[in-house]
Structure formats: C-alpha cells, structure tokens
Image (cartoon, rainbow, N blue to C red; front, top):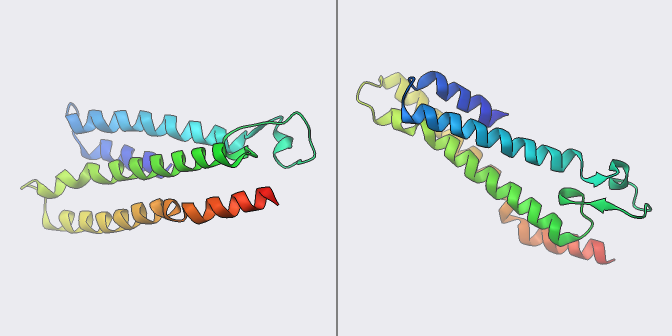
Length: 146
C-alpha cells in the first residue's frame, strides 16, 4: 500500500505525457499485481484453509507460506523479500531526478533529501530478512525434523 501511495503521489508531481509518468503508471500496475499475488499466498495458504493450523488433518494441500516442506516455503519467502526490496528501490529512485533539475527550489531539494534518507533506511531494513536467511533456514529445518 505504501508503494502505491508513493507512486500515486509521483503521478501528481510528474506532468502528463512524460516518460516518468508513464513509468509510474507501469509501476502501479506491477506493484498492484505483486501485492495481490502475495496477499493471496498469505491469506489462502492451504486448501481447505483450516488445514493451515490443523496439523492433524490429512490430505493437506498447502503452498507458499503454508507449505510444511521447508524448501517451497523458503522459495516463497526469498521471492517475496527480494521482490519487495527491488520494488522498494525502484519506487525510491523515481523522484531522484527532481534533485538535479535546475528549476527545483532549495527547500524542495532539502525535503527530497530527507525523503531519500528515510527511503534508504527503509530499503535497508526491508532487505534485512535476507541477511538472517541462513540462520532461519537452519532453525526451520531443525524444528521440522524433530
């Protein structure tokens, strides 16, 4: 939702008919599709849904985050973490060009600098689950095997 809010704000900033505005519209479509995909993977991890928390159920069909096999779970986890970091960086980088336009006022540049500092920190913290990935995988496999 934050990505979409920032992208819609960029639509207001960049004029009609510019390539940046068209790119923002493209990124809105990509971000919405990405969000819908991972929303479904989170909200409906098994069929029927109650088998997600009912470990005694038989004939379980789970996928993504609901998988009881560590390998498919880790694949979806890594796919979400990497795609989130990439999309966040792209959305973060779109307004950078405003800093280099000569007609941009100084207070706008300072506000953009603050936005970029907080955006950079957000991208770093958002990518941090990938750094903890090796220890999580070992922990998860050891918990499943016991």
